[in-house]
Image (cartoon, rainbow, N blue to C red; front, side, top):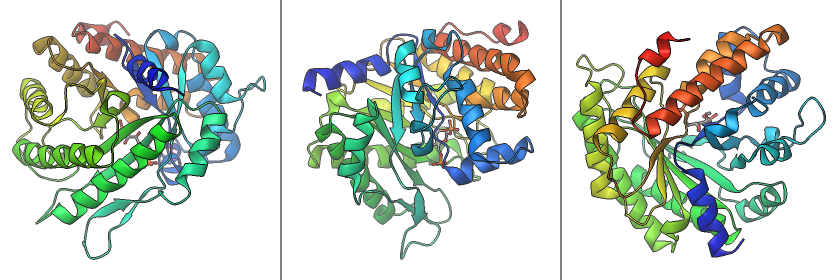
Length: 340
Ligand code: 5MM
């Protein structure tokens, strides 16, 4: 892929009113999701569920790309079409998760390092043949007593930069995902502080590893109160602090920023994105979504592993996609939820 093609792909990922659906749950994560609806995580059930997500009629109006897991990249729709091909036919770009997961970081109690650089060049070449246009790597930064430390942030930022450089070499757009977790009892200001240091470190490392910013997408957390914090910041405060943090850390040359939902409720994730775009309409980059749970939760519950629920589950997914598409334009209102 030429530089021009990489730029075109990156821009198409964050095209006006469009976002990314993350369906790249690894085996342990999809098992957790299926446990909630008491269905077994078999190859067949995972295929059936991903088929429903991938072939949802109308999805292409709101979704520019989907992030797949290795297994999903090699599976087919019910009529035998490979999933990547089924996406391309609808005008949706296939993406692939290429990290091998977050593991304990030696010497850093309570902190994680994402692995997966070994052999990545060869894996990227294969994924490109299978149709991948972009790839994702998630680094996990945990807030706690005395953490995160500089050692953890720097190690993760370095790995993200090495992965991103390999992606661009392979003609694949890197979606760089540093996630500051929102599970602890920290305030929104602590989240701001940690997110600011993390993003500064990540962009510094991307620069050092000669990653082209114009051919990169950032997937990041919002600046938000920890789930266990007694005082929960309101929608406006989350929107303002997130935008302020991004303005101070992210180069204007970046084609776009997409958010993860990180355990927020589906509606709150939409409301936060909407507030950012409504109150801050003239930013250097589009702000969009790349949610996993906040797009899938209602759909998964509605499906419950039963084929007779397929149409209703697809409608639930389409509704969330539409709400978030409007949130990209600052045009979402909570009245849209009542209409369902
Ligand atoms: C869909 O979940 C993704 C895969 O997670 P694991 O590697 O842990 O199985 C995950 O990377 C996801 O893409 C992001 O965390 C965003 O998802 P949420 O649910 O936070 O929006």
